[in-house]
Length: 129
Image (cartoon, rainbow, N blue to C red):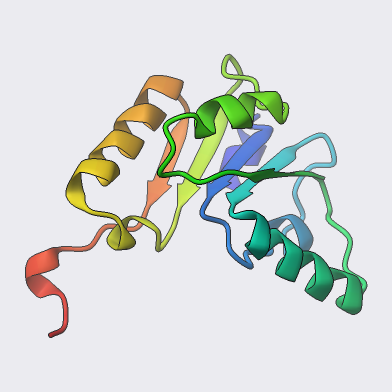
């Protein structure tokens, strides 16, 4: 919410899953939430949203893309994301499922894209056995 009050109008949620920020947060109507995940996730989410009768509070754009494919940023651009506009990037609970090299690639990709970043950090040496 702080990012939107500071003028950020693009929120990109990588590995969105069933995240409901566009539906539950009072985001500005001129903001766009870009949700990136697999097509099958969006099919399930779409069904659940329809059944619940939920509507987003802001523009919502789904991007069916595999983040293991380096072209996912291009798919995001095709979906309307503007690289020259302030962006809040969210990667919550995602990086732990990726090996170190893909994690580094994604964070570096986002650093090059600019904007604010929010990631979930975990240490492998503290992972449960």
